Image (tube, rainbow, N blue to C red; front, side):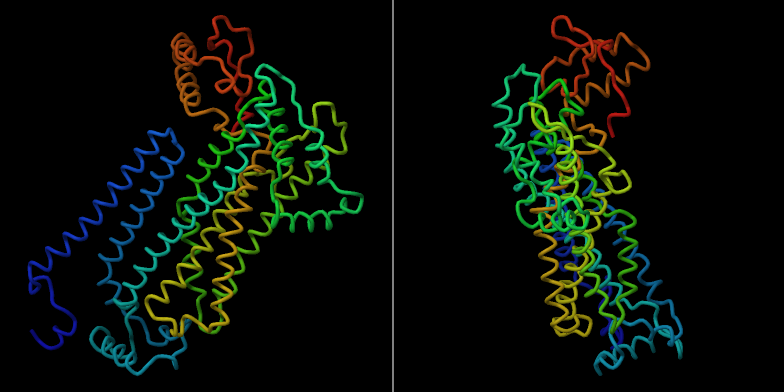
Length: 478
């Protein structure tokens, strides 16, 4: 082989077979181990009837498949991309590092690459090294994002599980067949206290109070009890013992399935962020404030919704059964409670991008790389990233889990998985065979858990439901 060929690297035909076999074995072993690990995790979710988490795992597998396809495209077309040449003047604009920061060794390697692949006055569109590094960055970004989402849900779930004893205490204090709501007067007074005195009725003061409330005791027991009673009064009036806590957890698991994936518009943001990484702009330093600002706005909005509900309850007559919180889509931006979830999705992704980009640059080019920027830009970015992750996990996500239930409609997770399956089967069969629909729906035994929203509209004999007893309204769910 010639010296030039040796410097580039040996081809497959001149590589020892044992080296190829070892590398192939390691890659296959890691891939199979990862696949079987995900498979057993899915079986574990199935055994525990955690359908939402199982679906989230399936979504994660789809994202891994997408990453694999992106990796395949980059590998297949790397020769075509690296052999495509562009004018030299286009290759020296919008650089992440200034030209004077390039070392003598880097200039020599660049000159050799240009002389081998492109004619005079032109340079490669993207070098093989840069393409390989971009390949790694996409993988690192996806991994960091999944880790951030999972850690947020785990830490947020730990915080939310502290509310379980509130739910148990409410149910234990309410007789099983008691159809009247009762909230202790102490909790009523504490919740109505959020409405504040006269000076807190001004919008600016109210928003300021909501903004600072998200940093300490974002959700109190009185908030939970009042919002729980409002949800049950509105959507489950015949069942004051409905387990609102379990419903909230099922809903959160369903939402996790939506945010675990990287949507097309998030990939579009990646492209925009990469374009804006120009030397001297300090783009990523300024972008690091974006998730923090959005997170604080979302947290303040959620706290303000609780305040508005308290004000509304305080302005009306409070009966002997406690507060009368009234859920409504009017409380949310553009009458869309789901919009808050999209904002949290973007916040988590943007924060993941910032952290992934930092560690990728550090591992690839070193801490003193020109693209790493100065220390006074790096430290604030890392501090903001940690603050966003902690605040989102322990404050914003629990707030969202509770306050997002204050919309005008309930979600399908108001039923447990067993009841959902039966209702879907009944709805499907009722289109073709009413008698079959009645046989399927009669399997649903009446209980507090299986009839959470008062579906039964007529007296039922033998404790069983038939199709004639069911009234499903599409206006009440989403």
